Amino acid sequence: MNTLHRWIVPLFALPLAALAEEAWHPSKYGAEDTLGALNNLAPGKVVAAARLVQAGKVYRLGVETGADSPAYAPRRYAMTILQLDDGTGTPMGANRATGNDDLMNLWMGIGSQIDGLGHMGIDHVYYNGNRAQDFVRPTGLTKLSIDRLPPMVSRGLMLDMAKLAGQNPMPEGAAFNRAEIMAAQKAQNVKIEKGDVVLFHTGWLNLAERDPQRFMAGAPGLGVDGARYLAELGVVAVGADTWALEVLPPEDPQLAFPVHPELLAKNGVYILENMDTRALAADGAAEFLFVLGVPRFVGAVQAVINPVAIR
View 1 (cartoon, one colour):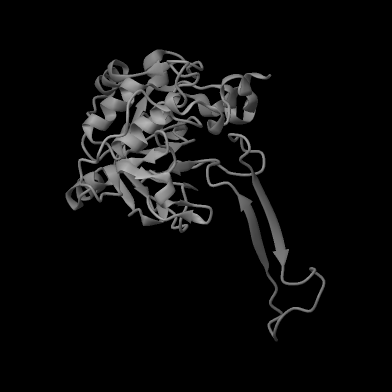
View 2 (cartoon, rainbow, N blue to C red):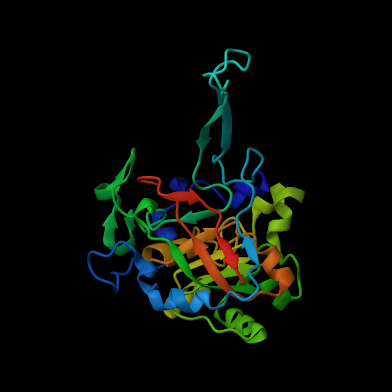
């Protein structure tokens, strides 16, 4: 059994009790809430974030997504280019128009992605007590799907955990929690606020091309205490330059991806994975306007994304 599969096994093979230490939490936004921490966005927050734009510099946070992208098995990407004819036939009309189309066979959870609130739950119960039997269908989610999400526009923060640790990249299994996150804020002279989008830079993304097997076999990342701290502060979303956001192997080997249900199921905080924070880190950019128009694929659990940071 190789390194990747020694502890990262399909979730359906894990004991359900291992997914979290305690049950999901009722939403503080109401019994019918389906948006979670997105409720913390407000027009005033958007206006304040827009004032951060001074230089007009734009950073794309999404990575290239293709057939060679490292991905959690069995996720994959396959593209087929279709022509209106065989490429040698008669063009259309007097203007001799020709063209191409594309057909994709794509797992939504590949490359840079957003995890919606229907992605991970606890014992088949998802955010705000929604039971899988009531909203999960083979044709798509009838609740908590990403097509229902409004645009995510807010203040973004990039915390350089690699610089704080003095290791770039940080090693797999290196967790950062409340104390480290507070130290990073102090070092970069920023303070996490309600409605923020917080991104962590660990340097791990550099391994995606150079050593994809190691990249997928573990990662530095957010610990459970850190996730709870961020949820307490009211952040909208949390992301990192790693494929799972959270530390792998996990802090407690008996738990399976514990940060995911902590953020998604218990607190309604969205997860952003494989965020390309390298240019932000190189510029020492800790604070920026974050913009994400979430793709509106009906019934989707996740989606490939390319958010932007603007300074």
